[in-house]
Image (cartoon, rainbow, N blue to C red):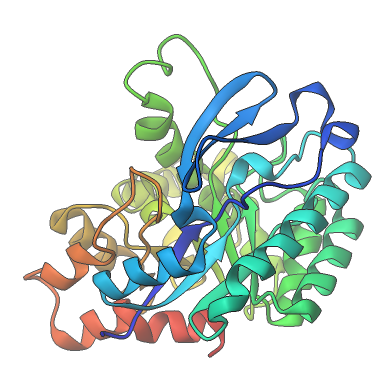
Length: 330
């Protein structure tokens, strides 16, 4: 067994209490189809087929051993965030799923690291649920990259991020609730183009929104999917900050100054993209992520990092484990 830490995986419980009182008629529920298969339903709409690797620790551990993964960070599936509900409704849903996450990870507490969810639309409630979850055994928190039309530089989210920094709790940002249109509904284009763009935009919000200028440097925050398209377009952002500073100069420093303030995962599927990512954000800011157990994830986890001819052994070790130890506070 190798020592890989995979910071990007998800869970789905094998059932949960009726959420219709809080989430309305479109509440998510699980249609059980067999001992090992189920369908996440959103009201009457089929959302995603899932299997036992979402909820069964034994199945998950077998896959981890096969992939050479020692530790997984296990985060919510974003469809359950419910940022569009009231804070009270979302807080109850978060409490239900956070408690179920602890049950899923408990059989392998030394290898499965649970991250909670919070009602991000209500900063006070989000801070309370974070504190409750961490006290119960969660090691970090996953948040969506926006709350309705509010990006991560909105005052409520900044308050929450400051609280995470003060508690020394790592944050994992995952894109969710992507825009839908006839053009994006073909070829899974929401996942292939909208997800990278959403992630890029959320990093942009922390930089140009001045969040990194205000939030304590203790904040440990990681962005999914290699940070989206950020690494490829940093030069464009930098050029715009200098060329149109009257509009874009909303941060104290140009965008490149904030490299080193955030982590990204490695799930970019191609060595050329990985090389650009490491060169751009830094070898100490990339961590293995797989998006396990979903079909658009990387299997075996960390394959591109392992096989990359452009990484020396020191950098490979940092990406496979060392950086995650720092991120998780191990």
